[in-house]
Image (tube, rainbow over the protein chains, first blue to last red):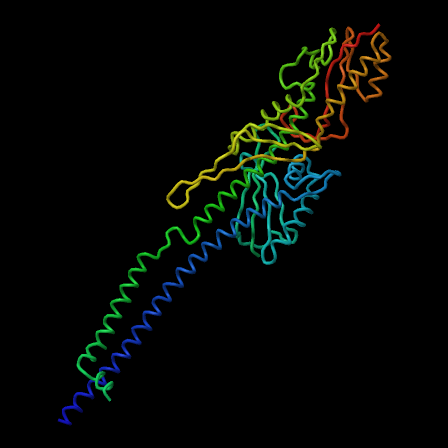
Length: 168
Length: 262
């Protein structure tokens, strides 16, 4: 009777341990699977949200840049007006460049920098401004482009201002 | 002792194995189910971003409206002064291209300049807004070198949020500095009345001296009709010229007065 009792206890304990190990292993495998799945989704969502936020920020930067007040010929105007003046009379370009540097450069900290390009209604480039220290001796990566349509004093005239964020 | 006995029964062994198997089945099902449900087709916060984007589009349009209003007002001010304060039809006709402000019958032919400005402004503004496109008319008020525009109606921007079409309404009013004071017409009217009362039944020299006093230029004089223009040296605006090219112009008011001389 005692022998029979012992025979029953040994395989029972072994199976019990195997079951616990299997259970722990199953849990670990599934934790890993859920983790992998969660990470990929989180990265994708994070990337999408970041891209959209940058897009909105860039639009705001361009709007605020164009609205920035400047004093030209003792008159209070804004940068959008100064761009029109520059297109009419090239001598205002230095002033426009100074004001653009003052407004945009503190926003784009290294390794980023900015460029402003103005296109006419036919999409021809009519004015371009680059952040001071950058020249096209090496290739830079274009990070983001933002465009905004602005009226131009000609019959039904418009022009497009493009702000580009570059990476050194 | 009783507890140990319970763990080592056949039922307990069966329970351990079943527990593992059931856990595997449940978790696998959960993984498959989540895999099918999770792909956030819209992305987290995509609806919120749709709203922010359409708000941004609205802001861009409002900025365009501000700029267009500034340019339209400057152009309208320049054009209106060239036409003697009349957008289209004058009250008493013209002497060549000079609108008559006072004729031989001493009839008051001064322009209702605020109303005429509003007509010219809306005509030019409409051209600019057609490029955006926005279709609104404005009621304008000018004071302290600023122009305030109240649109006749709001503008609705449509956008897709998820699967449904939504709309965002903007009221494209503006309040911009145009560096121009329309009340110069009022001053010119007062000066014209002063000239007429002082020079009636006098000689041409009276007209000449009054014109010099007011900084008016006399273009020509014919049968007591004097054609004047006044250039406002303080107001320089950027406008199209006849060749449809940009130029920085002084505003020049052109008008004709009948002065009953001796």
